[in-house]
Amino acid sequence: MVAHKSSKTREYAAWARMKACCYNQKVPYYKRYGGKGITVCPEWRRNFEIFLEEMGPIPDTCNGLARIDNLLEFSKWNCQWVKKKAGRQPSEKPKKKPKPKQNRSTIKKPKSICLVLEKEHLDFIKSQALQRSMSEGVPVEANQLIREALQRAFPTPGQFDMFGDAIKKKAQ
Image 1: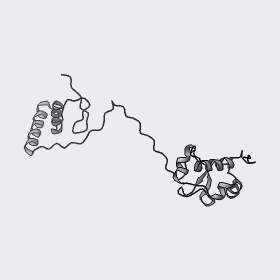
Image 2: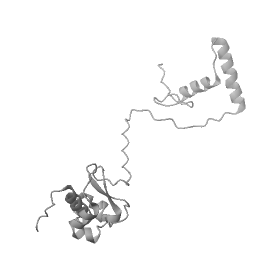
Image 3: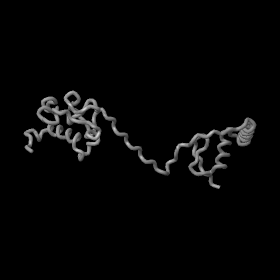
Image 4: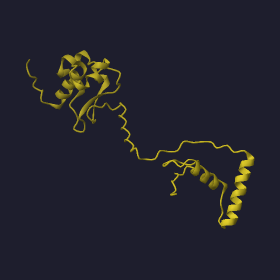
């Protein structure tokens, strides 16, 4: 095989890379191109001069070749010179960044629960809150009494109460 006189140019490198991605199964990007049935038009595949004539030289601001419609072959009507990151067509969606692994010691958000009280029970809790408010001289709400009861009943560390606050284990 005779080396082409333009074989050291950026255009020739892009042409050779395009063909390799479509026809050489050993190339890493073959799966994205040849593996999906993407081909190079016959004129370009056979002749670098026709490719160069139709595409022209790579502008200084560009560094690669991209297809306009990723479902069609590499051809005069479907390609353009672009500034791109290696290995990504402009119309391809960028890969999502993996979520960082959470530390096991982090506290997870509480799950919602529904606490149903009969009216009589709620009235009793409200009356207890009123009595405690009067005896301590500090306002005490019914929610606070319910929270305290839940903390006594479920003293698991890292547990959340029904109001979304972390339950702290009291020293006994």
